[in-house]
Length: 219
Image (cartoon, rainbow, N blue to C red; front, side, top):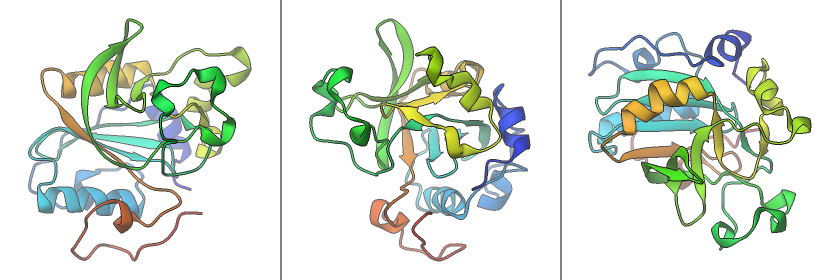
């Protein structure tokens, strides 16, 4: 597990990274941020293949409960911890976007892996980034929720072990959403890459070139 104390403490208030010049390596693109091999390989592939089509993009590392936001040139604009679906898994239950929350079981509360075209929208007057509208999957500022859930406390903790609580949506600090995500996606669509946690990386993304480490199913 990555998300170190420095990441949880500093990023919980929305870390905005210093820009890294376009054209540099994937390693340099992340600056001093803690990053997994899968996240690094994904960004490297995106930039080599131009899969983002020069659009802003976000990489969500579910295993480590962290979000990386890049502009269209691949410059890291910010990182933040995230709250994710309660259940581990890389697929959404068919039709889940049309169901009431009260009918969704704990085992169905997954954050699916994949490549998604995302855009700014609204849900009950809350500003959000729609990742998959049909599945009711979005990235948005953390909600208060039930007091027992302690979502703010989970975001601020030093490890990702307690970051699984949502119905599938990705919750991030409000300052990170307002200061990084919203400016990147205002007036344009973008791409969101959600990394798998039970499947191999290359079974989700069409990677065809060598990477920094062999595929491994996350623990």
